[in-house]
Structures are given as C-alpha cells and as structure tokens.
Image (cartoon, rainbow, N blue to C red; front, side, top):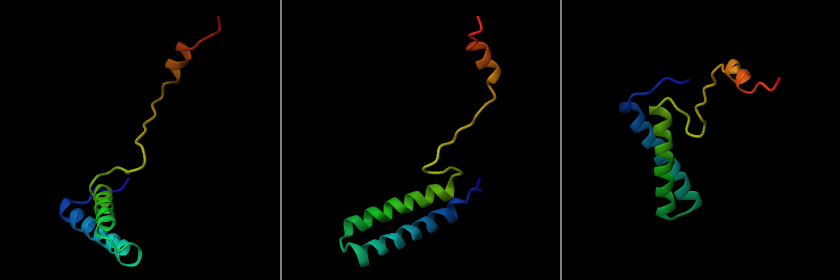
Length: 79
C-alpha cells in the first residue's frame, strides 16, 4: 500500500488537482459554473482522500482468515 502524505501536502495538491479538472470541464466542455464547481469539489475530495489516507476509494478492504478447520467441522455431512 502507499504511504500516507501529510495534510500540509495533501490539501494543496488536491485543491490544485480539483481546480485543474474544473478548468478542463469549464473552458472547452461546459461554460457553466455549476458543473465546473461540482467537478472541482468531487475531484479535490477524491484526490485528498487518496493522498491523505491509506485506503482506496472504490476498492474494498477484505481480509481473509484461515477458517477451514471451523468450516469443516461445522458443515460435516458424513453421517
């Protein structure tokens, strides 16, 4: 997994990423402030959580434990 980035770095980088993506949406695609602002907030928030926390936004955190012995005795249908 990636190492955590400090908040002093994560907040400005996320803001810059959000502002850049909002400018890309605003100028060539949709010249309206509301979709551009929504894009800025969404992308800045996603970038901040990706940088500041050691988690994936769309992934799940699954841990498998070795429980074969417990399942074998619980579901034993031999007789």
